[in-house]
Image 1 (cartoon, rainbow, N blue to C red):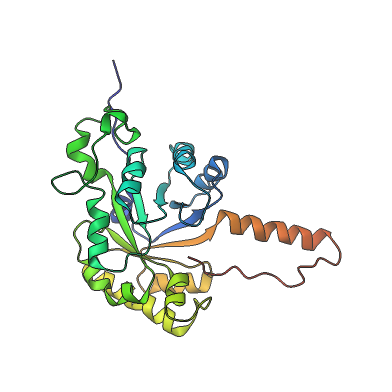
Image 2 (cartoon, rainbow, N blue to C red):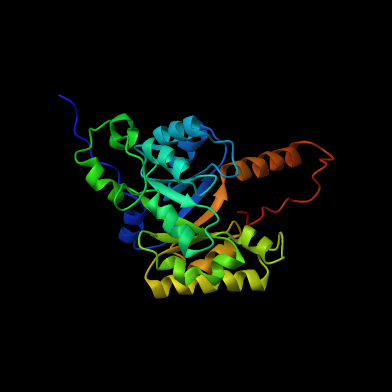
Amino acid sequence: MPLRLEPDATFREALAAADRPLAGMWVCSGSPLVAEICAGAGLDWLLIDAEHSPNGLESILAQLQAVNGYPVQAMVRPPVNDTVVFKQYLDLGVQNLLVPMVNSAAEAEAAVAATRYPPHGVRGVGSSLARAARWNRIPDYLARAAETVSVTVQIESEAAVAAVENILAVDGVDAIFLGPADLAASMGLLGQQEHPEVRAAVEHCLTAAKTAGKPAGVNAFNEGTARAYLAGGASFVLVGADVAILARASEALASTYIANDPVAEPVETPDSY
């Protein structure tokens, strides 16, 4: 007799149940082993990145399997807001999507539609073949599929900031996430994530989300900046990345044990993405 299974809780549900902001980190290495190490760290969520990291379908699947069973939410960022890509991600079991470069309400609507079966969207039907439905071992998966997916969209351009109220109003957008690095670049301030104008744009979006009654998150590797955004109403944050932690820690070892280390000054970790 086959097992009858239930899907995991979504990031949307985790945010709704939380009595504090959720802290997470990037998983960019493409390694299931590293993802599992991070899953056991005690953080609330992990972002498995496929936009700027060497991740394909097979490695994303392996990382989802590696972190499954740990008390941590797994979110995945695809490389592009694309219906076919979303179909593949959802079918292999991704439940929480972070959609990059959403600049308008229309783009947000397209992202949501790609996660819904007809007549409410355009997701292709293949549940009997898919890990998402545990190969039809999740009862009534087709009818319940929308409940098993959360959609967070990234606000990371001047156009997106200008349209943030309209983006937040899109039904099916569960949260927004601010990317200060690309936002700074779009404002002509490349590499200046701490610039007052960039921080003001982030804070404007945090306020807009609060007014709309939806959670907003932000990327902030600088602790002071992260705490300022949390005080400003951020409901979730990303505060580090596996590859950055490894890079800085290995440099520290070299500086400690090798004389005349060419890295004479500490390398600051940028508030990236």
